[in-house]
Amino acid sequence: MKRTLYTIAVLLSSMAAAQAQTPIKQTREKLADLHLVGEDLVVYAVKTEAGQFLYSEKVGDQTTYRKETALNAGAVNAVIGANAAGDELYVYQKTGRKDAKIATYRWNGADFQKTGEKPFPALKNHSYNLGAYLSPDQSTLVISADLRKTKGYEDLYLSKWENGKWSKPANLGAALNTRDAEFSPYLVNDSLYFSQKAGEQAFVTSVPFAKDANPTGQPAKVGTPVNQEQAFTAGYKRIGQKEMWISRTPDGLYTAYLTGYAPVQETPEPVPQPVAEAAPAPTELTLNYGFNEVFMTPAQAASFDAFLAQQADSASLWVKGYSDNVGPAKAKANVARLRAELLKKYIQRYHANRQFKVETASDVLGSEGPEFRKVEVHLHSQF
Image (cartoon, rainbow, N blue to C red):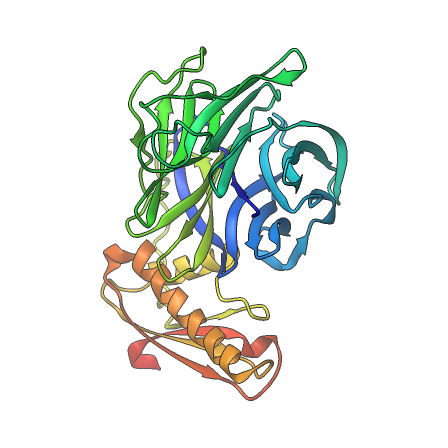
C-alpha cells in the first residue's frame, strides 16, 4: 500500500498588506500540495493510482504544465521544505516499503539539479497518510503520522538531526494532537502551522511554539479567506509576500490560490485636477481562454474586476461560456458550462457585497480556434 505524503509550508511576514487573491489552478486532479519556486514557478503534488508525483507550471500559463522527471525518483514524492533562499527544494522520495530519503534539488531557472540527499527516519507508520516538514537548515523535522499511542488519527511528532542521524520522533502532546487528524505541519520561528481534519472538512491552524519544541498556547484557526466553511483546506504557504493554499469543495473540485501582498502606503494629499466628462461604463466584456482552460489568469481576473467596478450595484449580468468544436461532445459542453459557472462563482465570492444578479448559459461553437474559447459577459438588457 502506498502512503501519500502531504506537506504545507508557511513563512511569516509582519508587514501590513493589502490582499489580492486569485485562483491560479482549478482541476479535478487530486492536488496534495503546492510550492512556489522563484517568482512564478509552482510545483504541484498530484495523487494518482500509481503513486504521488510532482508537476510544475508557470503561474497563469497552464500550457507549461509538465511532470518534473528529476524530482520523481520515488513512487511517492513530495516537497517537504526549501532552503532560506527558496531556490533549493527538499523532496521526500519513497522508493520501497522501507526505503525513503530526502533529496535536495536546486532550481537553475530551467530545470532541477540534484545536489544531495539524507535519510528519512525509519518509521512504523500505521496510517495510510504521512506528512513532514524539514526546516531550511535541515536540522528539524516535523512529522505527521500514526506511530501508535496516538491521541487520535495522525498526530504531530518532532525529530532532530543529531550526530549524523535523526532522533526518535517525539509526540508533541495533547495540546496539539486531538482525536482528529493533524497533518501538513510547518515550523517557523516561534510558530507551528498545521491542518486539522474535522469530519469532511479541514482547517489551517497555528500555535505558538517555544525554542525547546513545546507548544506554549492553544491552537487557533487561521482566518478567512484561507479557511472556509464546507471546504477541505489541504495546503497553505506564505513565501515572502505571497500566500498560497489549496481548497477542495464537496464536489471534488481542487482550487489552488495565490494571494499577492503589497505594502499599504499612506495616501498622499489629492492634487486638484480638471473635471473631465466621465466615459460611459462598458456594457460587455469578453475573456478568452486556452484549450480546455476553465478559470481566469491573474491578468484576466484584474480585467474582470475592473469591468465589475464600473457597473452599478445590483446590476443584472448575463454570463455565457463557449467552447470550440475540438474534442468529444460531452467534454466540450462541460468546458463551456464550467467557464460560465466558475465566473459566476467568482462574482458571488469576491463581489458579494455588490449584489449582482447573475444568469449563466453555455454553447459549443461550430468552429475551431482560440477566438471560440471564451466567456462573454453582458449587462442583461444588452444581451
